[in-house]
Structures are given as structure tokens and as C-alpha cells.
Image 1 (cartoon, rainbow, N blue to C red):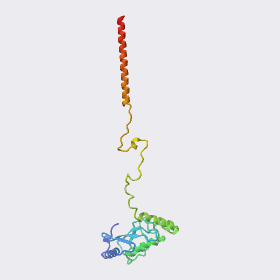
Image 2: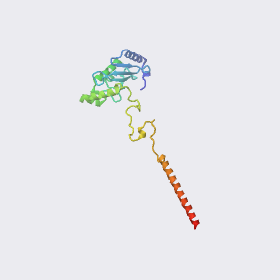
Image 3: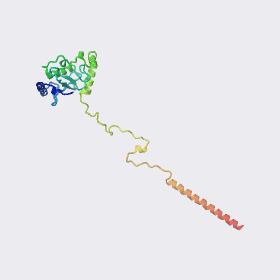
Image 4: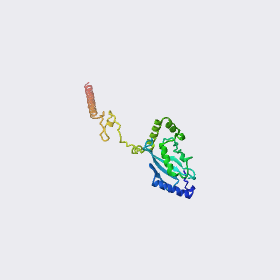
Length: 236
């Protein structure tokens, strides 16, 4: 949203600066003020959820935007923190009479902030922007309270240490089991490989040697037979 600093008369800017400075120095109870030095026409605040409501324990960020016709027209209020409330629209817009027909220039920003905080205590279902929240508030308060509390816990309260989005260490948690029947998987990375017996080992060498000896003996016998046959032929 564009700044309206250049659109406001100097005397209005001086009044706004004076009031915002006073709010920052002495804020209403349960409300923190975050003024911007660059754009005095947009005021950021944080409202603590009132006790005894579904919003208790939460901190709801909000902003007030002063238009070019301020203070003749009221500022516009928006919740930046998601909230389940009859008078807060889905885009965060706030519906409250002081920001509409009940606005008067002399009311000031402090009155606006206090009224919005009171809206968390006393919602007005008759002028609901969130129709579902308004209906539940009238017909089933327990369900309304449950829904409002859930969104408060999710969006308006601090997370459990902020580690949910951190990448998980691969060494954390249980590790997968190695297969019991596979010796290469069962052994660690530095374990020696399991020797496997091969058919061409020592036994194979002995067998080859025996076969060679048998073949040599057979050849000698055949040669002897041939020599004996030649001698017999000569005698004839």
C-alpha cells in the first residue's frame, strides 16, 4: 500500500507524529507500538490476547493505515496474524463501528486500539465479516471457542523451538537393519571380504597332476607293445 505522507497536510502530519510518539512512550496495556520513521501513516502494533478469551496467550500483529483524508475519515485496520473472529475478514480487515459510522476526528488512535482490543473480548456477530465465526458464536459457542483457540495456538503463539523446518540429520533416529543372510551386508565397511572356494584351487591342481601321470604311463605301455611287435616280426 502506498504511503499517504505526501497527501496529508503538514499540520495533520505533526498531530499524527505527536500522537504516535506518545503511544510509543506510553502504550495502552497489552498493546505494543512499532512506529515507522519512514511512513508515519502506517502504524504497526501487537495486541496480546485478553485473558478469559480463546485468544489468551497469543500475540496478534495488526496495522492501522491512515488515508489521505485522515482525520476526516477513520483509519483502516487489518490483522496481520490469522485469527478466527466474527469481525475479522479472511484478508484481515476489521469491522468495528469506531472505524465506520462512530468515528470522530477527536477520538484519536489510542481509542481505536483500545476498541479493537475490546473486540477480542466482546465480538459482535451482528456485523460479522466471518459469517461462520458469527454463526458459531451464536449457535455453538463451544465449537467457536475451540476453532478460535486452535488458530490462536497455530498462528499467534511461538513455535516449539523453531526446529520443525530444519533438515533432519540422516544419522538421527533408528537406522535400517542389514540383511541377516548376506555376509557382505552383515559385515562392516572395514571388514575383510569372505573368501570363496574356487574349483581351480589346490584340489584342482592335484587332480590335473594325477591325470598327467596316468596319460604318461599309458603312452609308455603303448610304445613298449609296438617295440615287442617289431621284434616278433624280425624272428619270422
